[in-house]
Image 1 (cartoon, rainbow, N blue to C red):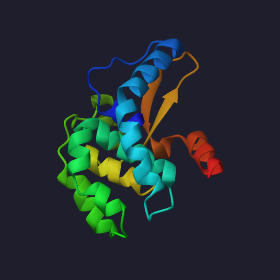
Image 2: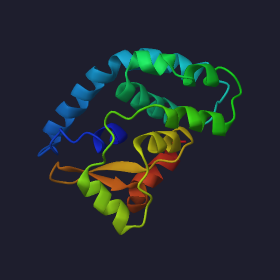
Image 3: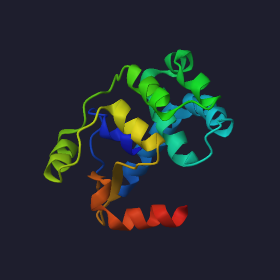
Length: 163
């Protein structure tokens, strides 16, 4: 969800926790057709580590390019065999990014902390490898913001505890 929203310039930041929940629910309904396509690829993959990160990255990818484009790409066949990381990375980077521009506020944050400004496909590939680049931070007032992952130690702690 963080990657999808980081590149979605049309959705206004939520002003309340309830509005954020509604936006989250709407996004889940929109990505539902992609879920059925992505889940078997993750379950049947020869790659068995970082399953949640792999699922999230593939879901973001399939949602952005569309199910048909995703299924006709090299990615499903690469995941069914023991493909190298470079093959998988090249397959990610070869797909077009339809929502390709980061939110301006996130660009400022990434530059401020000297984090790389990668393409959407590169961020999705990093997530596929288990590198979480963004966190959605919900403040006490219910507003959400995107933050580079390194700036949110509480979120990092929760992620490491979940593994």
